[in-house]
Image 1: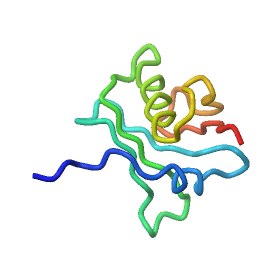
Image 2: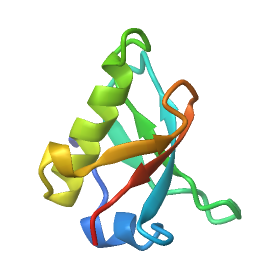
Image 3: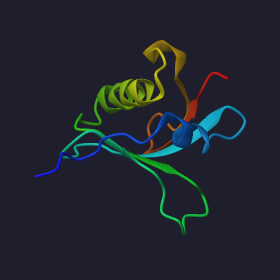
Image 4: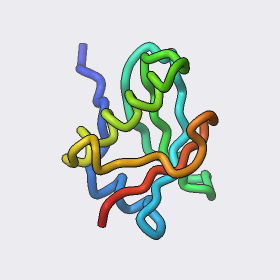
Length: 96
């Protein structure tokens, strides 16, 4: 059985960033940690991020930032949630 690809290329993720900010749609309590590109018909260009962490006490937010940092090859501390810390749709600042 083929291993599931958990990440997309960093360049593809960065192509969705607007003005140094990336919009993501988070699914906490997922079966695995993964990042998916938006569907072709998705006009909002929102990146889909699935994490196994629960949405309590910032655990899911920390998992999202850790997963994105790993996929982008950046330090975890360089990413910051600027909007939506209590929402499934989040805006994350990415250094340029």
